[in-house]
Image (cartoon, rainbow, N blue to C red):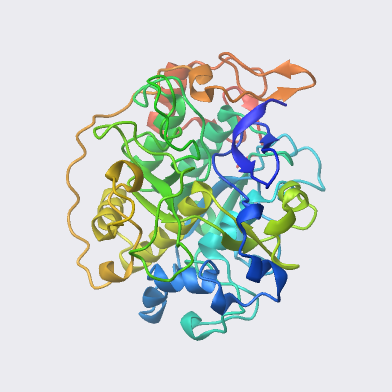
Length: 455
């Protein structure tokens, strides 16, 4: 399989990159893990990057104390699946949508996270250890609690054990979320995409960008990782990843706590993607994304490669804009618990306005409007969002352009050109028309092939 842009794993030695074409942004910086944490029993109260302290300084705990925990909000997670580990194993915590990955035909692997990324993200968004009950802020810090502990995860698996996926699978998954957002008691209001490609075309024609805009128009707040490409100076180089480069949705960069709970000394790590120029698309804001405590999946690809990032038998560390997007998706679930009728534009505007400027960052190209801070939003009112002036996209670009340099290879054959994972021809204009009408899926069929059971 061909190398991917993302989900890279940084060690003290040479860089190793997970193969495949899934996701943008998991940097497991083992060489940078605090030695005091790695060498002794883990104490979340002394680790500013633990979820206990991340939820505190981001303001999430203030929302919990006010009674807003994400209850009634479903967060769609298009990723590598979710494993039923403690924190995500309570009855009803995870709803499994269709498995659209290449592992879907193996009954022992269907919906399960063999890569380890989706479970990590799900924990950040809505994890809650078994037996932990509200008030969550009063729970012991040794319990693992995500940003929105009463939100529910709707998992759509698109990646295999090495992170491999194709953009056609991700588009199909987004379309499924839009069509089924209220089926069988679901209330999908948030879509997390810790995923990205280096598209070669304008977002206004890109098929992946068009798909996320249809989700946004359907009332779903789309949160995408900005990407781990850092600053790209060349005119033809990617800046923000696809679909984060679409100005309609929420694009999240990463912030680094600098080892303290204070906000004003936070920085933006070099890996976090940023605008090339002052007028170009920058992240809307940044959110915690360095050395975060997350849930392990034993013997998954990432778990086996993690090395010094392992904390103990349950936890490991992860860095990247993947994590930042997940933190933000959990935050969005809190706001939607408070204001269930809010529009995606209102949620985006509230988060942008409340973000705190980082003096040490020095540039809105890197941090957008600042770092995610939730406490000031709680009192309300939510306010009216400014009008979106970029115009609607049309999705008539190419699938190959949406892939950029990310290509899936199977049995020596590279998937490229205008065809999906099944080899079916992909007519972007025809697909855009179906997506615009909200019916690109017919039962279990998408783009002329049966992808899953009737749904």
